[in-house]
Amino acid sequence: MTDTELRVSKIQNGTVIDHVSAGEALHVLSLLGIDGTEGTPMSLGMNVPSDRLGRKDVVKVEGRELSDSEAEVLSLIAPEATINIIRDYDVVDKRRVERPEEVGGVLVCPNRECITNAGEPVEPTFAVLEDGLRCEYCGELIREDITAHLRN
Amino acid sequence: MRHDHLLTAKQLSRADIETVLDRAAAFDDNPAAAGERYADELLALCFFEPSTRTKMSFETAAKRLGGDVVDMGSVESSSVKKGESLADTVRVVEGYADGIVLRHPKQGAAKMASEHVDVPVVNAGDGAGHHPSQTLLDLYTIREHAGLDDISIGIMGDLKYGRTVHSLAHALTNFDVRQHFVSPESLQLPRSVRYDLHEAGAQVQEHESLDAVLPNLDVLYVTRIQRERFPDEDEYEAVAGEYSITPETLDAAKDDLAVMHPLPRVDEIAAAVDETENATYFEQAHNGVPVRMALLDLLLDDD
Ligand SMILES: [Zn+2]
Image (cartoon, rainbow over the protein chains, first blue to last red):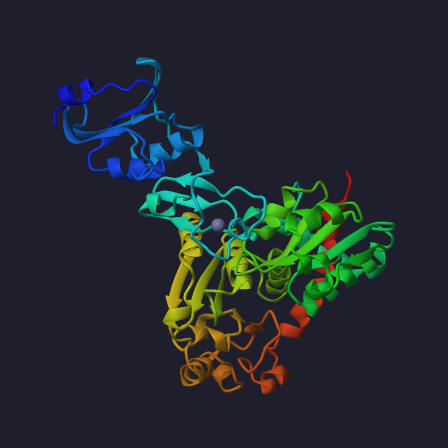
């Protein structure tokens, strides 16, 4: 599948995530909580030639706009990504992801003894380090495979 | 000290620590000076895990300052048993008292609690996380015996789960201290603490045996290795024996080595060590009162 072919499958309302690091598209889908069983129309391009990245992945999801906290985590998985919000076939918002100082909401702390896993009214929050994430409550580090810690 | 709460030892700068220790020393020298500094103030003691020692120490400190305490009592007899969240509990208690001392089994509990209330929260232990008031009394004791600069300290025992160790290690990075960690491989420092020590540029060495490093130490901080950390009794016995202290162990140490322990101990320090000049752990425990007085005085001061 080429970039040209991908462009053909336009979506009406939803999100196009472009310039995803090659091979990361499936992680982006799991960030969005999409595994195909929910019937959301979507298309996926993997290892598509790209001027900027050499190879890139592209994810198009119908009927779904990325929340701010999802966009923040996206920046950790795919630092070069651009997010295009589509309404009625038009790009109404196009932005690069920015690496935040802190992410919250979509990740779960891997430490079972953390207060954020104890049924308390508290949102797990992570400081973004150069080489990973760190729970603001218990100090636990997430160094690799961030997507393994996404909230279901 | 400009902090609303005391949650971790990590938040404390060298200046913060020295402010607390200096004030503690003043209270220690002249207990009457504490007077009625804390008159009419009430400190809430919320202990979700039993800890007679820490609780009594805070209670004594509040009363020595002229204040008083209200005690949540044991978890078994409280509304927590009925499923009330910690967040709700502290919001209710905030209405009763001028400060909250919290011991809780979950890591980060004190931080979360502090986000729900306007009164100062003191973390008196959050699972395997932090125990900063213990750290301050440890530092006070170390300063009295060896000073806090250009010293070597050995920290031995359960370094993985021991929150007193984690808090102390963080705090010592503010000073010119060489830290030697002595433990069985399975109980070495957790990754998150290592990360912080590395970030702080601490002088750290890890050892599986005390022998090589003991002669260089000014302070030896011993912690308990718990039975439940090991799959079977034999393994525990073997390891525990290797990381315990007797008067004979101390033959190889400097004469003025200070042996410390956060207490309670079981058999990691033989009773015969109590009779040596090196035994510092009971004095350390007593230091909890002036240090917690200083801490409360600084945190609860309205100015
Ligand atoms: Zn956590």
